[in-house]
Length: 63
Image 1 (cartoon, helix red, strand yellow):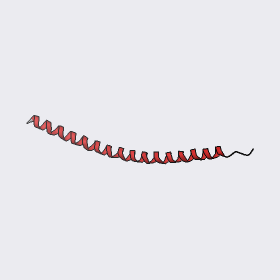
Image 2 (tube, helix red, strand yellow):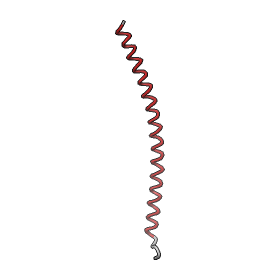
Image 3 (tube, one colour):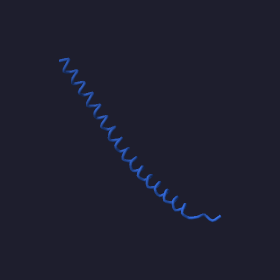
Image 4 (tube, helix red, strand yellow):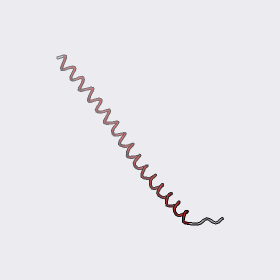
């Protein structure tokens, strides 16, 4: 009986750990989604800035 009780305790511990890890995974997935969105926005801003630099390079500046 002691063996069964120990196994049941281990199962409970593992279930608790699985629940905790599942919650952590959800948070990390949300963070990843937010970071991917921010990365996309920054890439667009960089692309716009690069285009502006190319346009400025093509226009001679008056001294």
